[in-house]
Length: 219
Image (cartoon, rainbow, N blue to C red; front, side, top):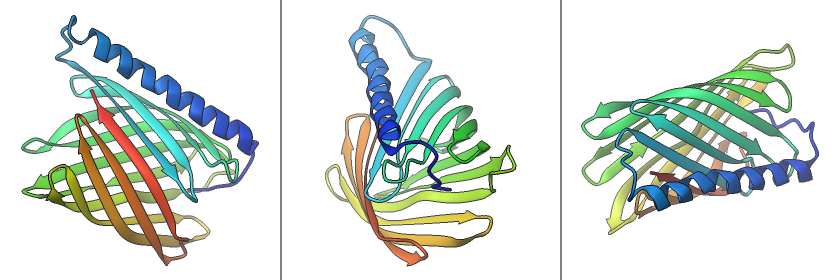
């Protein structure tokens, strides 16, 4: 992911927190009306990340059966880099109760406009869970570069109750830049219809050490 700065860091950070607050409102409204309205076919999610070195993000989606729409804001307040994302996707069964997500999106980033492809599979085998977020950036402007990233690939096992721990891997590749890789420790805490995560990642190749806090919820 390119972190070129073309917007002021304060504005990017302000937009990120404003979007995070707005994304939380539909979930609160749904909780208040779920007892009165049948919503068997409709569903939604919110996932957020705060990173000690790289970009923060918030993604939110709303679906009907397998199809959904998704919107996101990515911001790095240290560099001013930002992305505004809108797309469509599908949620499909992968194995038993496990799911996979595929998304096609349009991204308006600080350095260029991109078409984005996401693939997010998740598997659970006994006490072990594994997932991955794969992203591809295809530039729509001459200023952009082709990019591919595994932004997070945790493999965890249940330690006790809702607590799980394991390892996490990440990779980032782009044209005219060295490929970066990192690996570290992943901790997950299961909550009702949600999950809280902490990752501490050490650089393996061309990547600085960083930590991140993540939260995701489905409703």
